[in-house]
Image (cartoon, rainbow, N blue to C red):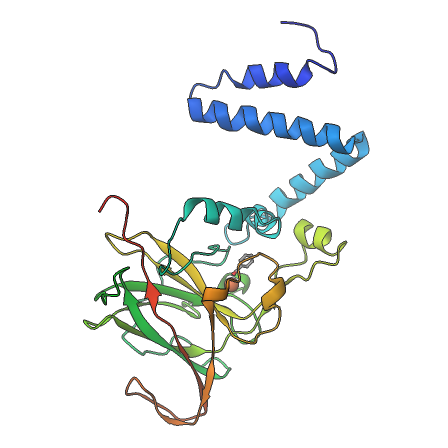
Amino acid sequence: MAFVTNDNLTGLAVERWATAHSPRTAELMTTLVRHLHAYAREVGLTEEEWAAAVEWLAAAGRISDKTRQEFILASDVFGLSTLVVQLNNHFSPPATPATVLGPFHIDGSPAMPYGADMSDGLPGTPLLLTGRVLDSDGQPLPDVVLDVWQADADGAYEAQLANVDEARLRATYRTRPDGMYCVRTVAPLGYSIPMDGPVGSLVSRTDISPYRPAHVHFLIDHPGHDKLITHLFRQGADHLDSDVVFGAKDELIVPFTERAAGGTPEGGIIERPYLLAEFDFILQTAKSQ
Ligand code: BEZ
Ligand code: FE
C-alpha cells in the first residue's frame, strides 16, 4: 500500500471499501466514503467540529430505544426520509402519493368495524374520514385493510405516553364490497417533533419551525398493489407550508368540513357538531402484475 498523503487518502479509503464482499455494499460504502471526504474537505472540518459531531451521534444513540428513534428523526428533518420515499415510490397519477412512515407507527393495531370510533372517548372534535379505495383504473377495491394512526388533540402519540395499556388512536379498518372505508375519530392537532434530544437541540439553533401540520397516517398494503404509506393533511392547518419533515403534499390536503350534529353520510349518528373529510385512495398496480 502507498503511504498516505493528502492527495491519495480518499482514493486509498475508497479502494479499501471496494473490497466489500457484496457489490452493492461496495457501491454504497465507496460512494459514502467519497462524499464524506469531499464534505470534510469542502467545509475544512476542524477537529473540534468533528468531535462535536461524533458526540451528537453518540447522544442520538443513547436517547433511542424501542419507542424513540432519534436517527429516524434526524433523517426526517434532513429531508432524507422523504427523498428515499420519492426515490422508491414511482407512483404515477392518479395514484395517491406516498409520504414518510414516521416514528410513531405501531404494528398490530386492533381491527375495527366500518365507521367505528377509534378515539374511545378521548377529547377532541369528532372527525369522520371516509371515501373509497380504488385501483388505478378507478375500480373500487373491496376488503382492503387500512392501518390508521394519529396524534391526539394535544399532538401526542401513543408511543410518547407512559402506561398506555390499550391501542390509542390507532386501528385497522376494511373496505366494504363497494370499496368504501369509514373511520371515526377525533381531529388531530399539529405537533412539534420531540425537541428534548440532539435533533431538537440542532433544530433550535436554526430558524426551522419544528412543527408538523395536523394529519392522520394511513398504511395500505393490498395484494397486487404497491404498498401505500401516506398521510391526509387538514386543509388550512398551521404549518402546511413548513412541515419540518417535508411530508405535506398538495394531493394529500383535504378539507375537514364542519357538519351539524345528527345523521352522517355513512348512516351513523354523531350527537355533536363534527368534521367530515372525504378522500379516495388510489393504489398503484404492482409492477409484476
Ligand atoms: C409523524 O408524522 O408521526 C412524524 C414523522 C416524522 C417525524 C416525526 C413525526
Ligand atoms: Fe404524525
